[in-house]
Length: 292
Image: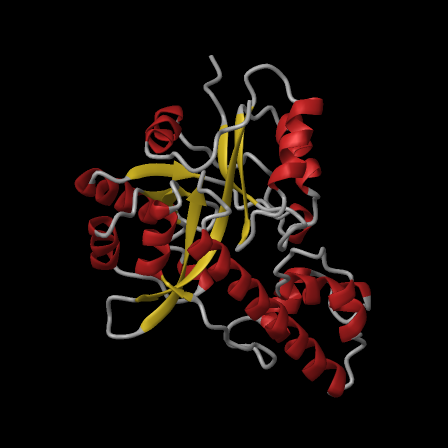
C-alpha cells in the first residue's frame, strides 16, 4: 500500500523556481502527491494563484500548505555566523512586523541581484540588468537563479549549476552578500503571526558551512518547531543524526524536495514528510488555513 505523499518544500517563479505557482500545484498533482507546501523565498505572493489552482484542478483529498522560506543569519556554533533557512508555514502574511521584514528582504534581494548583474555587464558578460529586473514578477524577491538563467540563455554557461559554480556561488567572483534576518527574530515573528517554523536542510554540507547540533538545540528552546531531515542534499549519515536530534529535542521531522522546476534536476515529491508530522505542525498554526 502506498502511503500519503507530502512534499513540504516547493518553489515557484514567484522566487527562484521556473514553474508558476499554479504550475507547481499541477506538477504536484501529476506526481501523485497528496499535499505540498509552497515555500518561495521571502514572499507569500504565490499563495492566491496556487490556491486557485487547487480549487480549479485539485483532486479530492489534495492539500496545499501556504508557506515561505526565510533567509536568516545565525551563529554556526563554532564562533562564526552562517546563513540558515527557515521554512515558515501557515502564518498570517499581513502580520505588520513580518510584512515589513519581508518587504525589506525582497528589496535587499532585488538590489543585490541588480548589482551582481551590473558588475557582470561591466565586465563584458552578455547580461542586460534592466531587462533582467523588468522580467521579474512584481512581488518576487528575485535571486541568483534568475541571473544564472540569463547566462544560460546567452550561451555563457550550459546550466544553472555551472553558472553558480563559476560565477555566482558563495566563493565565486560575482557573489555579493546580503543582510538576512536574525534567526531568533524570524522564529519569533512567525510564531507571533500564527505560524510555525522548520529549519531547512541544516546539515547540507554541499551548500557550504552548516550549523552544529547545539545551535539546533538552542533554536528549539526559542520556539523552532521542526527540522527538515529528508532533503536531497542530506546523505544518510546526516539524516540519521538529524532523526536522533529531532527525537531528543521533540522537533517535528519533515522532508521536502526543494523543487525549483528546471533550475534543479530534482523532481517534485522526491522527498516526503510523514503525515503525522504535518498534523503536528498544523496543531500549532492559527495564522492561515491549509487549502483542500
